[in-house]
Amino acid sequence: MSAPRTYVKCEVSPGLFSREREVAVPSTLSAPHRAIVDQGDVKTIGNQDAVRVYLVRQKEDGYLVDLPRETFTSGPRVLVPKDALIWEGVGE
Image (cartoon, rainbow, N blue to C red; front, side):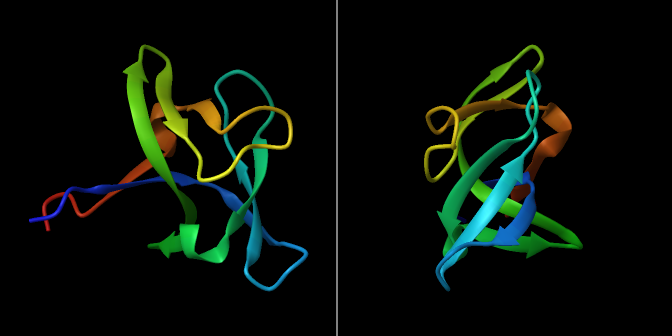
């Protein structure tokens, strides 16, 4: 059994190049964080677009995660609301 993969719900837009996607990831602190990621990091789970993230730690008000690439306004590490995470592979 493999470890569950972690995703964050997001809005997805096309990037400048064919393999790029712009994602808008919710934040607990401000407006959504925007980043350009590879299309391989984006997936539709159920009817929700999501981007693959790496869980750093759980905090009282959300999860600290690393996006696959830096955001336009800060580094790759962002704090997202708890209800924004999707765990794929749990219970499979």
